[in-house]
Length: 97
Image (cartoon, rainbow, N blue to C red):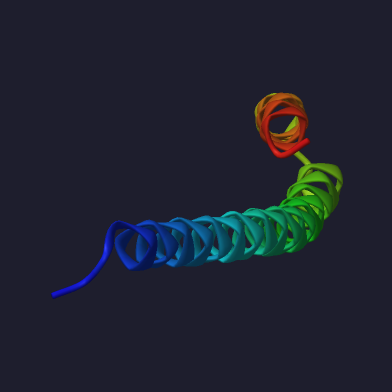
């Protein structure tokens, strides 16, 4: 049989081990969240560059056409895409802070 002092020390050891495990889990979770934020920002950077490239291509296409109305529609669409994507990227970056 175990005495009360042995049972008390076993409980203290179990509590200390549980606290250490909890601390390691918190640290891992914090590192995971930070890594996810970094990856999210990198993805947003790549998305933003791809959209900038697409918008630049649309603007060049708008300038190359000889029809004024086609040029105006293409330019308006490029501006719309740029504005919407800018708002989206800004909101996403704000959420990643």
